[in-house]
Length: 380
Ligand SMILES: Cc1cc2nc3c(=O)[nH]c(=O)nc-3n(C[C@H](O)[C@H](O)[C@H](O)COP(=O)(O)OP(=O)(O)OC[C@H]3O[C@@H](n4cnc5c(N)ncnc54)[C@H](O)[C@@H]3O)c2cc1C
Picture 1: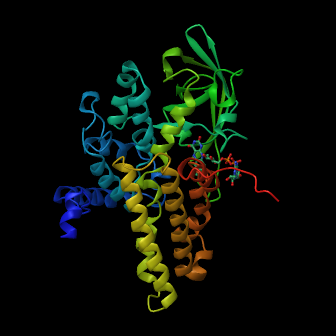
Picture 2 (picture 1 turned 90 degrees about the vertical axis):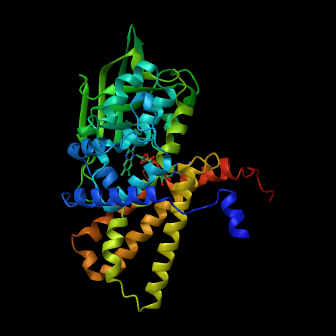
Picture 3 (picture 1 turned 120 degrees about the horizontal axis):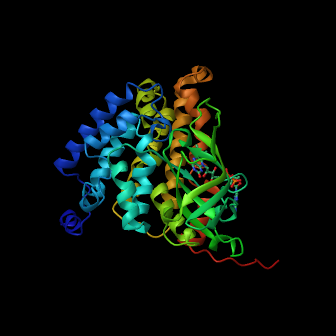
């Protein structure tokens, strides 16, 4: 009786045969593609491949959920979830198309003009354009509203001067989705606008930054007198702040935040000493945490999460990824001190709870916007 009621209420977690087949197909495609990569972990961020991007397009896996009228696949969010959970879990190099597919396309669909959509969406769907995100600046990471890169209107153009930092994929990107200050006299959060900037524009200098794992996927981007056509401003002039918040929902609530090092876990787990009760308990924690994280992501994906909940999802999922890195280190034992996949992931893991908003900031958001905790001074 109770299970029938659950199904009737829409709470049936069983996947249709079609979704299972799609996920299996994506897993096979991902497995083959990952074999060509030196590193399978964090493939949505550092696994760049123009060739694979075009393969994804041929399979119809870019812009999957976007309306057919703009060239998208018109498919369901669950289908997209099934594909990318499988691809990223296998370590497939999806980074070239990931930012555009995850958040730039949806942003253009929501805030862009018809002309902007026709200009940029077809190349994203064809897998032939790579995008980077220019939000963070030196001294303006968590507090985006404090950013200082300026855009000044001059005739039919905006002239941009300033500096971005930690810009993932900037060295190989064709376009940058960039936030700049357009009204210096307005309150900090009310004077920002968003631009699509051609990375080949004169005045742009990209300097890759070598991270602790010796990878150089993120960069400094210096902008000096960069002219951007006026019709490259996306959405409302000086109205970027609410647009950024919407974009962050796409950035924080997805499956990429849960499975960055899933492939490593799958490879290391068979070597764990499972007769040790403490090891068994840790595996139980990891497996149950994974399933809980997956349910949170699924709720985001089908649009049923409360406002601001992506902060909870990202916090849970990225702390989970750090736990996975640490578990893999304990299984490897002293070998984790050598330069290998396990040590690389341990060194990389702190980044999980920094990128896309730090855990401290996200917990502040949870307190303020999700739990609406009162702020008052406790009398002494
Ligand atoms: C791997 C990686 C990839 C990235 N890719 C991109 C990218 O493509 N594009 C882009 O724009 N940015 C990118 N970033 C930057 C990222 O968004 C910022 O690092 C992040 O938002 C934190 O900003 P910050 O580094 O300036 O740290 P800060 O904001 O200076 O914070 C430093 C510390 O202080 C804490 N803190 C700050 N303010 C508060 C507060 N009010 N309450 C409590 N604690 C606080 C933070 O939690 C943190 O621990 C990337 C970062 C990483 C690690």
